[in-house]
Length: 346
Image 1 (tube, rainbow, N blue to C red):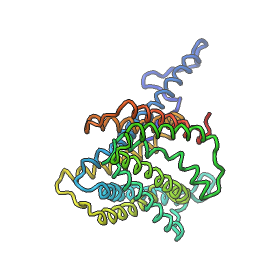
Image 2: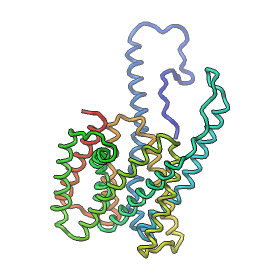
Image 3: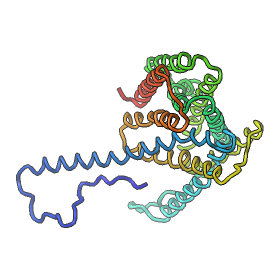
């Protein structure tokens, strides 16, 4: 997806104005045009984020209709996406080699080839892939026990887990300003999980699995962040996806799940899952958020549980009670508040 054009020197064919610009209210007109162009340039990333959110929220839908088990579905999601990510990584490496052969404006050599992955990073890739596999295994199983909306929402509680993890692993200072959003999140969890479900064992199990998903995804992000600082992003994601896929299939075999689709429709579901959730959703999101204010990007990301709730209602008749909707609303506010604080926003 190409970057939105933001130049102001563009003129339409047949509308060139020769000669000096006359005096008058032209600057105001130019300022208005610039504002309209800026608004238009921001509208495109907003549409991309909305599309990404809709794609990411489809994950639970495909898990529910898949012919193979939920853990095996996660394995296919990762393995089918890995060759596409590897192709993107090879294309990026090829561009790097081309740039390396071309001198820069100062006469120096261009950037070098991709760095080798050392033993320490190889260990981190395996560890990160296992964390991602645990995340997918638990999350996919949770879709079978709780609503799509709750599974997506509870898995988004990562901001409240990252801070204590960094404190325990790296000795980072705890951001005490997160205390109020965390208390609000606990109130939302109580409303949603305790009051909203009436402690139904199956529903409670799904909610707890979705909460555990957030823990393993936070661990994955901690590992992946260091890897992506040293290596090209698609290269790392491709190798992480391979490890994740193999681990998911190992767990699925131990659980006795069905591992092989029995029809063409079953294969189409798995391919659609890999393309929409693993590739299209993540790629669009990563590209679009670079052109949006952090607060606006965080708000759009929180629309994923909303989209999942719509899918659940339309496709599976998953109706939320008023108490559950109240709990979801409180949790959305707490997550948005926490994200803005972590991003340095008031």
